[in-house]
Amino acid sequence: MEIKKIKLSAKRGGNGYVSSYSVNIGSNEARTCGLVSAEHQILLCKVVDDKNEQIIIKPKRYTLTNETVQSVISTADQLRKISDLQLGSVPCVIQGIIDISDIPEPDEDVRRAEAELERVLMDLSYEEVTDLVTLMLIGREDDADMTLEGPERFLDYWGYLSERGVFNAKESLVDYMVEKMPLPEYLRKGLEILEKPVRTETELEDFDEW
Image (cartoon, rainbow, N blue to C red; front, side):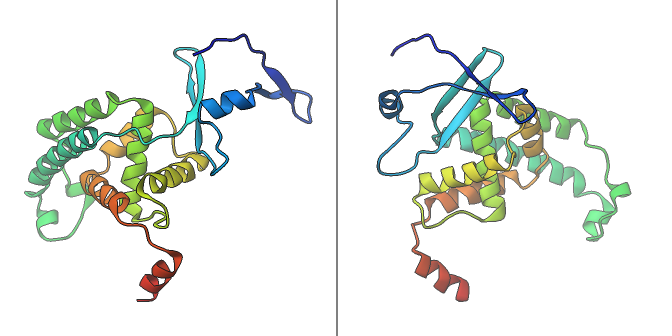
């Protein structure tokens, strides 16, 4: 490990105002830290940690453990069951006709279950939360590049979401997941997709035609 003095170089836009800053990273530093590879492109992420006044640039990795994902699934399952019990007594649900005005406000049990899921998610790091959102959306959309290996399949989709500005504040991402009643199903489906074998382009085309 090393520590060095660095300088930020200001970059100015057409109006003359500073629009960004750049910093030099030596080629040897980039190689030894795994930021570049002669064999393939490395997906990098920038972690802006304003609380600790630091910006971290690092290779993106899958941060979720099976224990973490199963804990979220279990907690979300409990919320789903409690919510279903409450909605099961609503006439409009029994009859298969949804009338928003007939759906009751969440009772105390539902609010407690929501708070527990929120607590479990907020206890995770911001990066873990973005990984959970990625896994959830892979499962919801049933969409990933199946020509890639599982880990690369995940990183490819994470990069796609990041480029589209999906990863906003941690609290917003947590709220987004808590509001998704099928969350456990989405996460299970996401895990299944990541575990599926690699397919060639020809195999995928044949599958689509079938």
